[in-house]
Length: 103
Image (tube, rainbow, N blue to C red; front, top):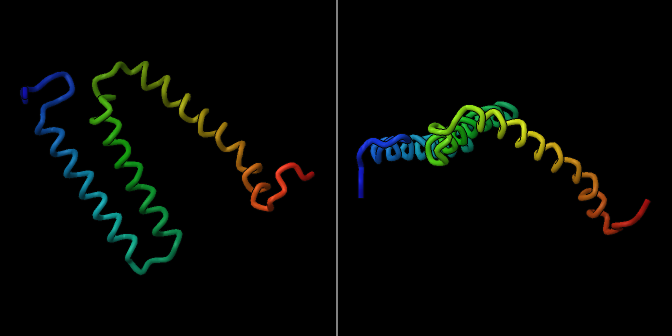
């Protein structure tokens, strides 16, 4: 196994990022069991999840070594997919009433 520094970093870099992600997960567990109100917990958990996802995408999905054009293309495409997925929520709420084709 080659542990030399390549274009996307070495094994040490991946281990450090992995330990940081584990630390963020432990911090999320501590926040979940804290006695704070709902909106405060939600904002803290959301911020930590965004940082955690950013680390995973940057290092484990090798976006750090990709060209900037790919990242600039993927961000709007991801937002578009999420917006289009949001269009099906009204159908799912209608199905809760067990009348799939009711008007």
